[in-house]
Image (cartoon, rainbow over the protein chains, first blue to last red):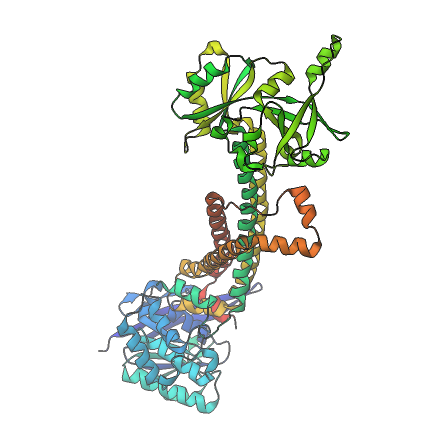
Length: 217
Length: 412
């Protein structure tokens, strides 16, 4: 049996809107195995991003438990355990593409020459070897997302959480980014959780989940 | 280098940008504050230093005084000469006289000096015109201060009449004593308004005659070994003086205690007030960094998502305040010392443009702007500037540290 990467039991999250309580997630159970690719679809406001934030350990559930591998999820382990890709790229505008990729590693420790070489390799693997010294403002949307993807892979994480990674891209560029994301995850046997509205992209993952009314249907 | 320091540097000096506007303006604000502090305290210090030098040059390091007169001057001077640290002594007597020349009268202070000994204690010849005027000073001559000579219209070679209070005493007893006619052999200029306008120098014997002192004097100026503290020397002399002589020694600092206190107080107040320039600059740094925190909310969220701790995010913004403070301080020091180096050119240009060169000389008595950068004030300026600028980064840092990554990332 494959190693479990994510084990969630009874995850629940609610928000207060004025004096009204909105139950966004109502007891989510989820097991994701190493190397698996899972897509999560759902309507706007169905709780996809909330679930992804809980899985990333960025937000705490009101109820339920979450484990990364065989240990409980903990913020201190996040940087090395998982990488994230966001709809809005979130590159740091003051540093170039290569430095943005290295930032993921720099937060853990001062980067060595090996890590610099890995950042250059990752940049090449997303097809941007020639753009290493370019600032985010000098890159197109697709190129920025490819840099963000390389940054997510920098620490060789076990899990990639991608939240609408094509949301800000045109169809053609979005296709290319999804190809790259799925291809790199498959190549490195990195587990992928992809949140998307796009049924075609979701269909390319090994398992498709649909979130409605706070539970998987 | 820790990532938060790396990112602080990159946010201030982004890759590929030759002129980061926010950084330049922030650094310049702090630099101007530092420069103004350096220039002001150095020039104030320069005036103070000159006044201190001039005070020592005219009064000696230590004065030995009596409750009344010193009648055995030679004996006391011999005693002083045996005290370790005492290099030379010279007697003096002082009072007030009336001086008349060409129908113009002035009422200056008068000081009787020993021309043969005074040069060993104070460098009087440095301020004299002609420089060898002391050699010409005898019991029938006088040296006038420059402004007094101007007011009297007297020049070297002229004769002035000197009226002493003794004349009035004699008149009361129906004795007529004629004023003393003295030849002007020199003019002195210390560069001090009070001394240059109201003092004449005569020989000790002339002063003793004018005041009917006999062989008595009012005090003895003492020169001490270089490097020896004047207060310590005064204490040493006081310990060595027999109580029966009823003499006491005071350092030049004690004599001018109130004046020196005012000088120091003025300088401290100036420093205190001008420090607010740095505080104002720091507020603009705070404002800019706060805007930066708001603008970079999502990036701050990302840093949290990548594993950055809240204290590290805070340190990133605190370091920006520190770097602005450090860079501004270095630039300000350069700017301040640069301006000090060309201060005379600036003053000359200003006085030439405003036509105030003569007024400057008349009222402020200087054609050369003094400067004495005190290491203590420079150190205090550097510390204040860097600490205030670093504190300026605290509020933005606190705001940034409080941002939850999930909230920050949601802020689209």
